[in-house]
Length: 73
Image (tube, rainbow, N blue to C red):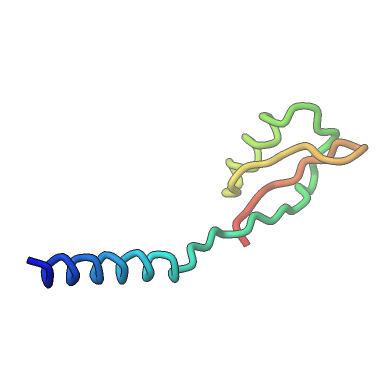
């Protein structure tokens, strides 16, 4: 019985150690300026326009409120 318990604990330790060792990476998000876009007033309009062009989304940024589209780097 004691040997089974030790084996189980050793197996559990190995599983937990391997889970910690695996690096889970997320894709970085990059921004690109949307060309041909006037003043960006509403984030949702910018995001919708960017999604229609195949990007992940979009946001209005900066003093001039320019539309920037988001994509995975």
